[in-house]
Length: 349
Ligand code: ADP
Image 1 (cartoon, rainbow, N blue to C red):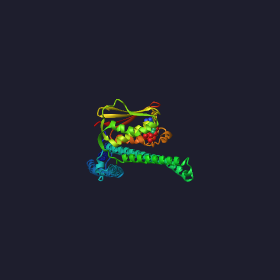
Image 2: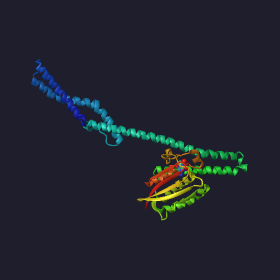
Image 3: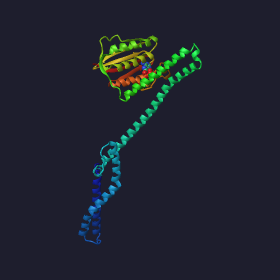
Image 4: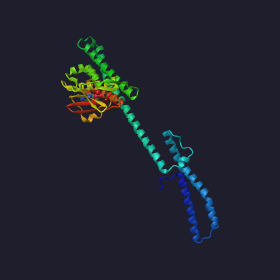
């Protein structure tokens, strides 16, 4: 009944209640036979005249003790919502209690949400910084160690001088990879990367990447090829350079974590207006508990093995950024000991 009652209406009701109480009092006194200092009609006139001051007094009291405080809350909410604040108080007075409650609750909820978001960001920032310094420290200390050993006489030792220099160079490469990967992720996240959309043959691009990674597959004696059922060109519309990076990262991983003497197959399937690309290996596989985090930056299933392979834990994160920038999806299926399949979609041209 009082759901939509406003503060002005409350003032009126209180005034009416006081008047009625007065009237009842007067009736009781009259019926009790008590003598009044004034006549009934005079009393009624006084009562009628008193309505206005009573209304004003109640209004003043409510204004003073209630409105002022509500107005402060409203002003705060309005500032947050960036809408003109209630200044005269009239709008607040005519606003129902329910609406005030809704607005305050909505405001409190948004504050809570914002607070949680900021806390998450802070946590994320801390983790991110921790991860970066950890990732950079490892190759940096290795380089320092090799160079110091060389300076302290190692450079005259034929057994280690060339070897240590090569190791230092390989760690420099790793540092460079991490910094480049971070730079790409940063560009994606700050919205600086613009896609250069064009039409191209996905099958041809995959062959190029396979050629690039042939040496790596050979080292592990892995047979790396496109599935035989693909004959016609597969025209897609996307950023060729970025899709190349996606294919490179997925195929390189399939080779890195694939089985020695095993197979890595690239397959394609058409579904409505999309082409699904699959990169399949018969390697170690990934346990289910890791699958949800696989595309997080710096996430590694097995720290030491990945690092030994020169991995930064950023490759799949870049894959996800690129695919999502195309408004497409990427997913993974894996069975431990049997292998993994990574899939991503692209629009047909
Ligand atoms: P990294 O540079 O360490 O390879 P990625 O982001 O490319 O980083 O991959 C994240 C982790 O996912 C890797 O450390 C690895 O443990 C796991 N992973 C990726 N691809 C495969 C795969 N094909 N088979 C098994 N594990 C994989």
